Length: 422
Image (cartoon, rainbow, N blue to C red; front, side, top):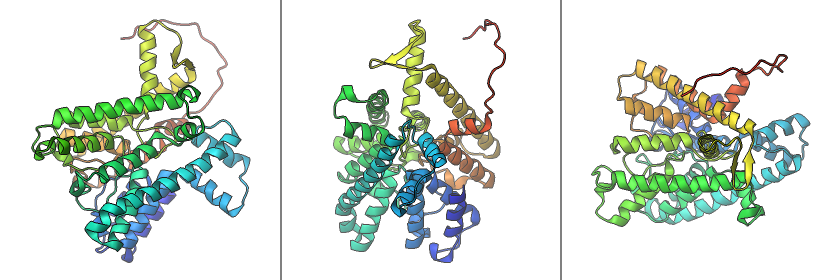
């Protein structure tokens, strides 16, 4: 919250914008950047100066990397020791149980971020420098590399990446960056340390299988549903061009938020598909948002176990504990209530199409940033709701639940009663 306020105040400075913006515009932009969402009420290219865009990309980097991880990197660079309390907070933030593994993971995060963003910027220079010149092209490359790896979806082009819809470099580098950033640092660390499938943890295997399945579903259904839509894929004659756009748009809905086609021109069925993909999101301990892939996979495994009358949930030769299943139930319940409440408030205070409003809320909660051109239609109350949803989506429904809940050890055990369900 402090970072959002500081970012908003910084964007209010005269040197940050080409024209004066309101405090509401500045705070909304700062919230969207820190939560790596990408929804925008101002034009990043036309409204922000180079310094404004620099502040924006710094907010994206801090928000995507995680403030706790960034604090550890700074303290380590200064040679300052971490206390037990800070170790504990960071351990919870990165889902680690060992202090040794924790520090190894932090170093892995730093290396992955540095290598991925530098390599991405260098490759994107091959496209942006020839089309916009050396200086601007270099900045466009750096900005998009940071934005892509952090799954932010902000672009320094007013029309997004629609001008590069069929460019092979953009359609390879940008998706690769946000897939690596969104798969989770734990998975990346596991894959690099143990290069064999059977040596990987259950979390890594579930994440990889779930990610591949969602990519195939997203890309395949995008191609099927939008193939002849004249406002999206149907605008291109070549089958290769249509599949290229289907590929990019099918994977970017996993909380990246870039667009190479008109999102407002999608069929309603495709928009509904994208809402589901956005809410699922990416992996834990990553730059992505959503309820996370592993959450959905565990929910499906629990459902399958119920129908097969099994009392134990397992996958790939490993079982999933009851605590994890209860966590999944709580996370999905909180997310559903939050989404419903936000949609209700938005529809009650706005006259827009229900699908546009629902899409906006789902995009904000999952920190994706895709919009059916509705963000600029929000009134002040609507902006407040979307900012709160972006914030809670980034902080996480479970964090909200732990914050509100009080842990009281049970003193009494009650006899089991029967409840009729379904």
